[in-house]
Length: 447
Image 1: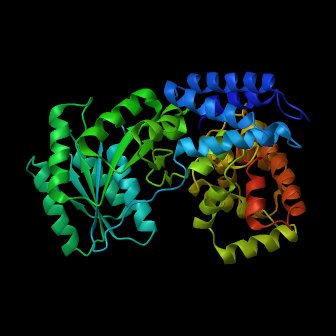
Image 2: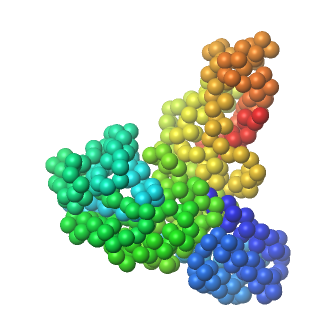
Image 3: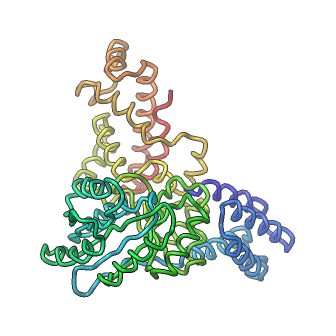
């Protein structure tokens, strides 16, 4: 995400990197490049103007110009201001003192609103809450069916009625959640293709009747300033509590994320990073600023890994690595664990410096499929001892996996390299080893 902006900011910093002294002239030049990068990223003009003025004023001070490493100090100034523009600090959902906590979700049609409702329900369920979702989008064809299908995947109850009465659905759902001992109710409301009076009135009426503890506005991050303008209109009418940016994984620019807090004065609370129900992340301004500046986001990477972490399995794996017994069966299991953590491109972006190192690589999650097919076409004996895989066996595996013999050779070669690397790094922490291993995964299968 935000690849274009990250690349342009990196380019702007090049004139200052490694210099023992910087001047007003090259600071001004770098600031101009930063402003150009922000405007190219579709950041609101006033936000970009204010941001670069503050950066320039701070950079002109003695702390930067006379620093031992002025280039690094300048980067810190930019980082500090990015954090402020993105919201300063993490703001979570406000939970009711007496359950159920009612969360009202609004947004335009096509923004990913209904999918977000299911994602949020899963996120809260993983946090030991007992959510219920309410299908108050009674106009869009199949909206209720979509919510029921998504909710079934995560085993969360849905409240719906036959009548097209959104206000009734919402109000009755509160009682239903209380009776079912659900401590959170998430209400999905109707969207439109554009902001209109009927839509605004309905959401406002629902809010007035159910008095939600939290109102969230869902917006497509890829629409840039249109997203910001829509968010502003909605806020003026329903005064929501926070913003949810969906499709952030496809947003190479970042204009909406960098503008919305300043323009609307409401925090970004969650971001959607994929289509699956587990592709939702709480929004941390400091972590996002780090990723934009190519510093990675190790904290989020560790948190994702810990969600899949099995201490006994990890200890067993560590012993295998140290004794050089790590085999293709173990490797296949590790692939499944990594896939549960999210998309490969998202994970790579969390490892410091990895985005730049792999920026020309095709980071496609489907790259795992041929690897899995090859390993699945092997016998248990071959998985446990790849050294026995001769020419005849390779031809059989290639035929069974729909690949070519050269693909088998490439996989075996890369696997041996990975084994050596993992053994070398066996004294590192488990999480550090996992992060280091990510670099080879996207390139392990290339035609």
